[in-house]
Amino acid sequence: MTAETTVPADAEPHPQGIAIILFSGDLEKTWAAMILASTSASLGMTTKVFVTFWGLQTFVRPEKRITGTNWMQKMLAFMARPGIKYRKMSQMHFLGMGPWMMGKLAKKYGVSSPAELLEVAQMMGVEFVPCLMTMDMFGLTSNDLIDGLGEPVGAASYLADVASGLAPIFI
Amino acid sequence: MTAETTVPADAEPHPQGIAIILFSGDLEKTWAAMILASTSASLGMTTKVFVTFWGLQTFVRPEKRITGTNWMQKMLAFMARPGIKYRKMSQMHFLGMGPWMMGKLAKKYGVSSPAELLEVAQMMGVEFVPCLMTMDMFGLTSNDLIDGLGEPVGAASYLADVASGLAPIFI
Amino acid sequence: MTAETTVPADAEPHPQGIAIILFSGDLEKTWAAMILASTSASLGMTTKVFVTFWGLQTFVRPEKRITGTNWMQKMLAFMARPGIKYRKMSQMHFLGMGPWMMGKLAKKYGVSSPAELLEVAQMMGVEFVPCLMTMDMFGLTSNDLIDGLGEPVGAASYLADVASGLAPIFI
Image 1 (cartoon, each protein chain N blue to C red):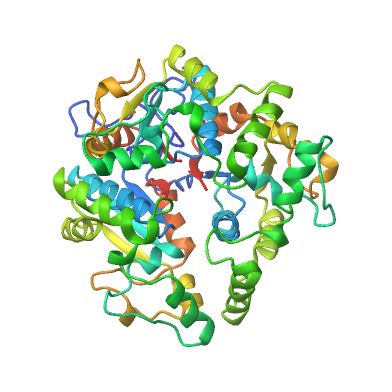
Image 2 (image 1 turned 30 degrees about the vertical axis):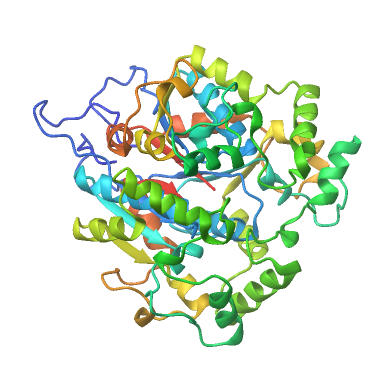
């Protein structure tokens, strides 16, 4: 993007897109990722989000409570309730009071919730792609995940996007 | 940056700049961000830091103790004292002993403190830009923040910098 | 990478490389970094990993227990045991039960451990470079670190890689 090119001076420059890795399942980082993704798409930038590890828990259907096929996977799901509505804050969680206050403040100042932003982002064409390896390790199937996600892929697929010019953002 | 261009071979390549999102308020990550920002500017790279969420607390004036206009905002400020001198470590904080030890070790080995590095970075032209949405949610006004920051902006402004070629770094 | 260039249309595009900052010492993030680094190298992308702060602890030889030359450094090493086999989870550590379960699940689903991935990455030419400043502050010498790492360098060296086109990823 910084180099002069042979493109005619009046050509529209292609805005550089972004390839987010959403690794965290914290409420605040989920929020940040959703704001970046929906805003990026609204600017016409190619926007992909590779959801992995704790970040994948956010994309489990809200009605699912316990996921996985063996006791370890079930226990992991039990300890960290999946679903975008059940994200915890990384600090000042205070048994849920922190998130409740953040929600109150967001509403007061017209800031959309992570769940609303996810919907907007999906409508605007942001591609959310689950990490195949995380699905295996946590025992998740495509049926456990919300609608509209891409086919599960590995890190190679994510890195191919980076190699082709999307700027990586690890959240 | 990787593509051959029409620029004459002897032209100085434009070094790619960076656009940091400082999301964390942890002492260690604040330190890392300040080192990257000041070093990047010293190399002649365009350097911007978008300060958001817990990261914005770092840029509140040290004399401010409680910020915000409603009880929830005041309580958030009370629980996590703002200001660059009051950052806590993400682990081994030990009621302040961790940061004290890190400060001791830094001094011993000639490493500048985050506050010193911030001053250097600002002098070298690093642009620190507060996140408007975070200011709203935490009830912060420009008067609450240290001098020399840019006008508060939204995520779209940050992403426009990325679209124009600055490499994003999320800290 | 997004710009049209003077390169003939049939030329192989140079895949953009990545320059990871491995800042975290958490088990999960160590894992993510090793997966990204080894996969990136396997795709033929230039791959460097700058290991700093808690991330550097991961590269201390496993037989070292206490490192550093003064009591503060020794205490830091004592509190957070260095070495790639002793990484803790950022959540659900449960006195080691979390990592044990993750290890079990990884083995069951054919996912390599961080230590195995590190070995693969090194064999594939990923350059792991320790942060000089962190070595000073933690009192680490090259003898304390595992074999095959690059010469310790500062942030300027890392940023020069970014300036020359490697995409930064802060983990």
